[in-house]
Amino acid sequence: MSPVSTPTLGKQAREALQRVRKEIRAAEEQFEKRVKELREEEAKIQAVLDTLTGRAPASGAATQAASTRTRRRRTSARRTTAKSNGASSRAASSSKTSQSKAPASTGGGVPAAERHKKMIELLSKSELTREELAEALGVSKVRVGQLMEDLVKEKKVVSRQDPRAARPRKLWRAAGTKETVKA
Image 1: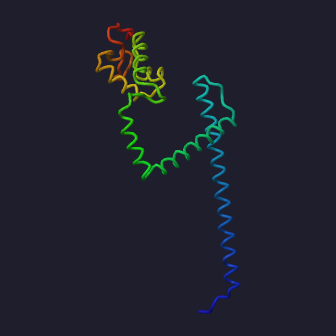
Image 2 (image 1 turned 30 degrees about the vertical axis):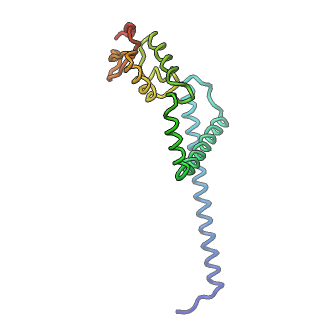
Image 3 (image 1 turned 120 degrees about the vertical axis):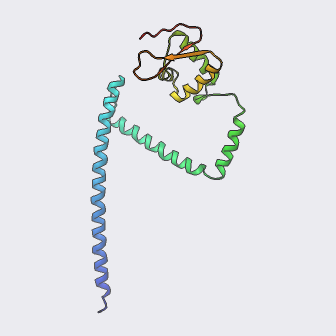
C-alpha cells in the first residue's frame, strides 16, 4: 500500500463535509415544507371547529400564536417535570401529606362543598347526564363522578338509566324530585 498524502485527505474531508451539509439542507427544506403543510391542515381543522362551536374563526396569525403558546407550555412542563425528580419531589410529596388534612377542594380553588351545592341546584331543576354536569360546572367527567360519589353516599342524588340513550347511560336528579326526561 502506498501512503496517502495529507492534501488528498484534506480534499476528501472537505468534499465529504460539503455532501453532508448539502444533505442537511435538503432534510431541513423537507422538514420545513412538511411543517408548513401541517400548519395549513391545522388551520383548516381549527376553522371547522370554530364553525361547529360558533366561535369566530381564528386568523392564521392567531392560530400560529396559539400553537406557539402550546409548544412553550409543553416545553416548560417538561422542564418542570425534569426538575421535580429527586429531592424536590420528595419535598413535594411530604407537603402533599400535610395538605391532605385541609378541607376537600377541586381544581381552580373551588371547595367541593360549593360544587356539591351547585350540582344539587342543577339536578333539582332537571335530570342531567355526567357529561352535561361536567360542562355546566366546568370540570371533567371524572371529577363529576368523584363529586357524585359523595352525594350518592349522602343520598342527596339518585340515578336511573337514560331512556334516550342507545347505550347504557345514567341520568342524575336530586333526591325527592320527579323524572323530567321522557323516552
